[in-house]
Image (tube, rainbow, N blue to C red; front, side, top):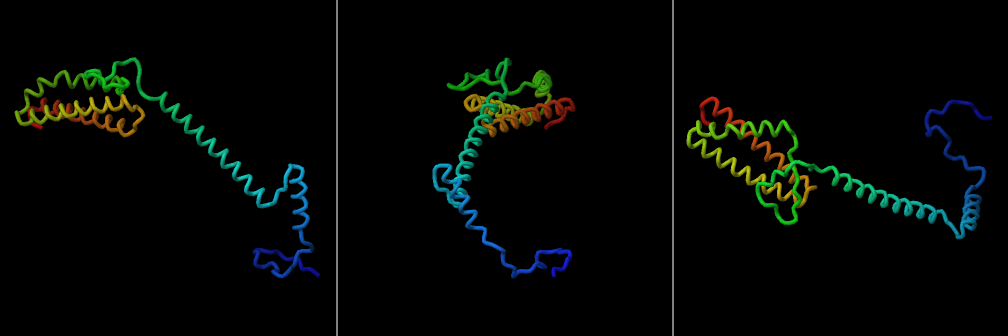
Length: 188
């Protein structure tokens, strides 16, 4: 007589109970029957190996498709447009694509305003500070031109894009410092 009690763990089940019948011969005969309908003998191991191989090819095709779409979207989303490129001050290198990297009107307005008063503010600085500022601005301008030319050749290079943004920020810092120092009448 079996006792009805609640089992709270698999460990409480009896370990020595044998199954009423062996199910493997029936499973094997069904697999053989389905294999003969498909045109070949299918073994359980073969069936398991065929599915992952098909899935691997499907996954590979999906990955290649995703990469292709990502590259296509990335290329079409690059900055550019009707504005003249910033690198137009120097002749473009052969094979370079002219691209405008700065399109924010607020940046352009502030940059132009800082450049407009730069001469007078430089004149109000001590000679040593003035030389440092002129040298820094020349180095920054050269770096911008080189980065813009390199980006014209390889517009999707994220490192070059980041370096160019950092160079723009450095230039704005120098111009702002000169503006503040020139207004206060002190050196940098």
